[in-house]
Length: 253
Image (cartoon, rainbow, N blue to C red):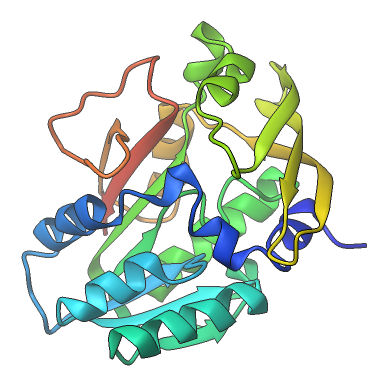
């Protein structure tokens, strides 16, 4: 049986690119470039690359990028967009829980819940972090975003989703946050690229900063910085607060 995240991305590439939460690509890539020291000789891995928005923008700026995603239909769109942009990117259908890379990349990015935190068990989510770590060279850097577990303790996830709904975008309803597991269970309704209306029962894992720090330390990361994650405006000056729906993590080996 397919998991919700597999069904969601089956035929949802063009509509996905119109979602409000994917409109911050340029600013996010500015941050990635700064973190990479604008070194064009590095190799970058984009985990959960989706339709390739970060991969393509970084390739346009002269970087060598490999993008992986579980959804072959998202990657079809990513390849189309890369061709339109005139850039060469190695897009591969891979499961982030079973990556084949070992000590190959200088920088790994995993943005906008690119796999991590969507998995149905904590063990599976940890496998994704483990594989990202394994893909990195010694002294490599790992940049990712994840759902901030402090947010639902002080705010309503339901109200957050309601406030960010735009016409034509997916909509989350029936949110129910479980304090024991830090998982939000909700129902997402959306219309796919063929105009079919769909409804899926989803659940996503929220993480608190101390958990992320401990998990990354256990994988050999020695420098771990966690910030607030602002759409299209990642910054080291953004101290994480309870009002941040996502957190931005920058970890170094």
